Image (cartoon, rainbow, N blue to C red; front, top):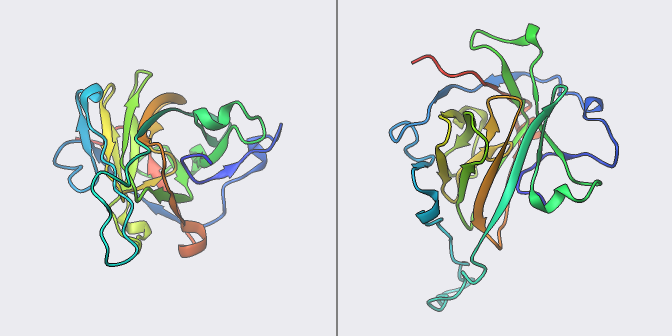
Length: 228
């Protein structure tokens, strides 16, 4: 299973056949990623090699506690995340799926048409989000260029208005804590595509929210730098 929710493409299926839903769009504000703006959402990381990704031990099922030193045996794993645009589709793939043509790429959103752009400029349309209850994610850009992270603070009663977009400057890594919602993939390149190294727990769960089904809307997120 990929590390992000979406619509997997089958075989030689063209992403142009999967058009964005004709639903109202909730405009997500985008701010520059700083230690202040990211409070409660994530942390900018200057030294990814020495950064410790947070893992959450398996919970006890009853009143007896989990034995110390157990419940975290899976350790960490790294995967290469690739996000690109093809036509209007925003596609994502990871190391696990890219060698399998039947499920190598997943549609996680769409680019708005030029005539749909609002006052904030060109935007991407995102239909869903997910979080990991059992560990954080460390996102390290491989290619130059800025990227976006569309996040919401922890809580299962999430709604469209809880999401905020963070414009991350080139070369900056981002740590996303356990429980924080990520719309689409963990990182969205501001340009036409980009690669990222994502470090997370080897054994991981994913909890998802389809905003189309639950709220009848999609997120609209500007991709240009926010005005200072």
